[in-house]
Length: 126
Image 1 (cartoon, rainbow, N blue to C red):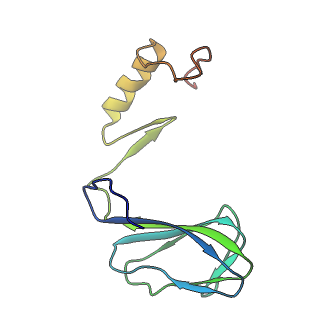
Image 2 (cartoon, helix red, strand yellow):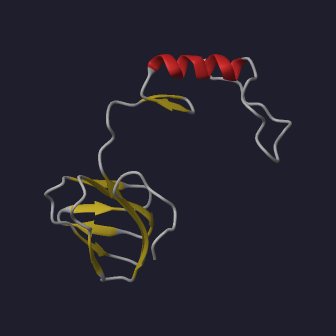
């Protein structure tokens, strides 16, 4: 299936169910690619991956995933980001200054309340 949502760079996201012993080739043609194991176990070459593990592949890798047990996996990939990203708590930005501003905005209550949870306010971690 294909999403009708407009995207600004080539990417893919696939939710796949694999039966035990089945194989699936990771799509090629994307610079960054990975698989995340949601349920079950899989193998790719010498790598063994269980629930909660993400395998990241180089652009050149010819990866074939094999389910050791029934598995649900997420395949994802696309073009690399256009620069460095910084992360601090729930904030992600290409600017450290913007993250500091977001932290001040959070502390001073300038973010809207979460719909359906107007009572709880989580303080900014120290």
